[in-house]
Amino acid sequence: MLKNLYKSLLAPALLAGSFTACSNDKNVAGGTEAESTIVALQIQVAGNHAYSRVRALPDDFLAEEATEAEWIETDENGFVKIPMEPGAYTVEARHVDGTDATGAVYSVALDSSSSNVIDTIKLVELSSIEGFVLLGESTPVIRIAGLDRYVVPDSTGHFVIDSLPTGSFEVLFGDPQSINLAKVESTTGDTLYVDCSDSVVQVTRSVESVATEVPNGDWNEHAALLAQVDGYAVGVLGAAGVTDSLGNILAAEGEICVVTTTEDYVIVEDTTEVDSAGNAKTTAVIAPGSLRECAYRDSPTWILFEKSGTYNLESPLRLGSDKTFDGRGRDVRITGMGILTQESSNLIFENLTFTAPAITVQDTSSRRALSLHNGTHHVWVDHCVFEEYPLVELDVKRGSHNVTISWSRFENAQTGVLFGLAADIIMDTAQSLTMHHNYFAGLSRDGILAHGGKLHAYNNFFDSVEKSGVVCSDAARCLIEKNVFNNELPVTLYRWYNEDGSPVDSTVGFVNMVENKFSAGGSDSDFADHAVGFVPDYKYESGLADVSLVLRLKNESGSR
Image 1 (tube, rainbow, N blue to C red):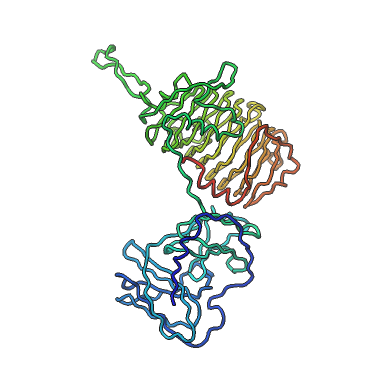
Image 2: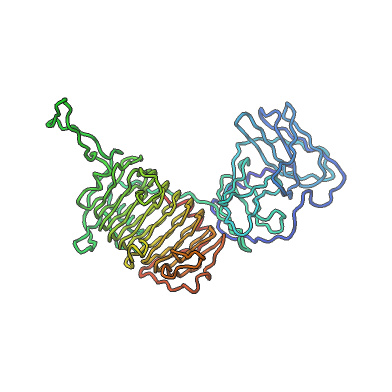
C-alpha cells in the first residue's frame, strides 16, 4: 500500500518554463469529510533507529504558519502505530543521532476496508531544495503539500527547504491563504529561481557550468577566447596583437609568460656596498616568475598561471599595452594595490578575482581593483570577480573608450563601476563602455555610476543595491536594455539635487530604457521624456530579462 516517492529521481536536470499561477481551490488539512472507520498504520523504521519520530499528514495539507505539526516517537524497536481515518496521507520519518540526521517520506492510501497497514521505512541521508524568489510587492511563502514546511524567503529572495530525503517533491509558491499557487516538481539538490511577480510563475533549475580547460600554450586556446569578445571592445587582440604609434591594433605573434610564484618583490643584498657596521645594502627587485615580471614584458604577452593562489601587489601594477591576463582553470586572487593603466590599449583580463585591497579607508585615495585611465582603449574584462573594496571597484575615465565588461561580479563596495568623472572636473564625451551579463550585489550605493560618454548596459542583474542600479548623469547617453532590477531605485538621471528635492538640470543624463524587468519598483515608462539615448554601432545579441537570465548570472558570472 505504501508508495515510494523516489522513482522521480529520473526527472530532467533542466527545466525552464511557465506554470499557471492561479488555483482558486483552497487546500485544507483533511480533504473531504472522512468516513468514521479508524485503521492503524504500523511502521517499523529499519536499521538501528530506535526512538525515531514519525508523523502522517493529509497529502493536501499545507502549513499555514511556521510551526511544526506533532511527531509521534517509535518504541525501542522502531515501531509506531498511528490511528487514522481513511484517506490519502504523506508519512514522514526522521531520526537524529548526534549531528547526523536521516529521514524518509512516503505516501499511503487507506480505505474503509483496511484494518492494519504495516510496512518498513528505510531512512536515507537528508538534503534540501533552495532557490531565489524574485520579490515583487508581496513575498510568497514556499511549502510542500503533505509536509509541515512553511518557508519565507529572506530579504534577498533566498530560501532553503531543508531536512528532505533524497527524492522529488511538489513545491508550491504562493500567498499564505493559498488563493494563488504555483506548483513545480523539484528534486532535492536543485536550486530554483522563481518569479512570482506576474500572473504566470516562471521556474528555472540551475545548471552547473563547465569550467574552461587550462590553456597549455596552444594559441588556438587564445583564439577561442578572442572569439567571445563583443561590445565596444571588439577589435581587441590582447597577446595576439600589437598597438602601433597611432593606437591601431595589428595582429602580431606574442609570447607566453607563465607566472610561477605568488611573490611580487624580493629583497636582495648588494655585497659591494657595506656600511661601517658590516651591513650590506638591500634592494627590492621584481621577483622572477612573478605576475609583475610577466606584466612588464615589452612585447605582446599571454600571461598564464602555473597554480592557483593569492598574488599580493605590494605597489600598483602600472600596465602598458598588448597583454592577456588569463586565469582560466585557476583560482587567481589579486590583492594589494590594484592595477592601473595610462594611455594603454589592447588588454584582456580573464577569470581573475580582485579582493582585499591594501587601502581600506572610504575616501578618494583608496585604490581601485582595476583603473582604466587617460585614453586607455580596447579593453575586455570577462568572468572576473571584484569584491571587498571600500569605495569603487573598477573605473573607466579620462577619455578611456572601447571597453567591454562581461560576465563579471561586483560585490561588497559602495559602487561597482565608475564610468567617467563629474562634469565640473572634466566633461568627457569620448568614453564608451559596454556592460553585459554582470551581477551586482551587496553595494551600498550604485551598481554603475556614469558621468558622460556612451554606456550600453544589457542583460545585467542588479540585486541588493541600496541606491541606484544605474546612475546616468552629466549628459551621459545610456541605453539600458533587458536588465533585471531587484532594487527600489533602478535608474537615476541626475547627479545633483537642490535642497527642496528638485534636480539640477545641468547634471541630467539621457536614458533609453528597453524591455527591462523590475521586481521592486520602477518601469521603462518612467523615463519616456528622457529617451534620447543612442544606438551602439556594433552587433550584439541580448536575451530576455527573465528568471532564466538571473539564474545564469548567479551561477555563471565571475571566475570559472
